[in-house]
Image 1: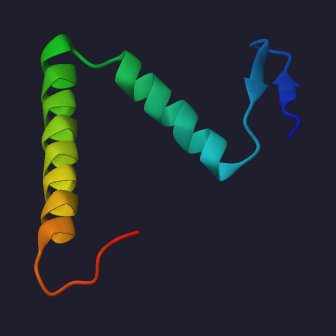
Image 2 (image 1 turned 30 degrees about the vertical axis):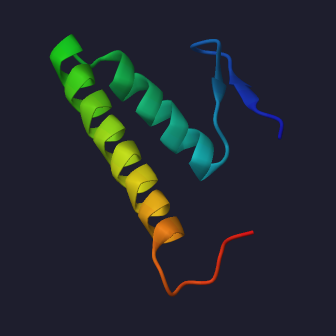
Length: 68
């Protein structure tokens, strides 16, 4: 994937929608306050713990075939 240069601002111009989304996320995360960042990270950690707990519970439920 080759990106074109914007010669006015001397920055790379994203071509793909994925690149545009990543650039937007990068700008938003850079402009967050520390409180907003802590809140976002806390929600992310909670979701990760819930997901891990659900995976462990499914693994140990009787009646389900063992995971290999």
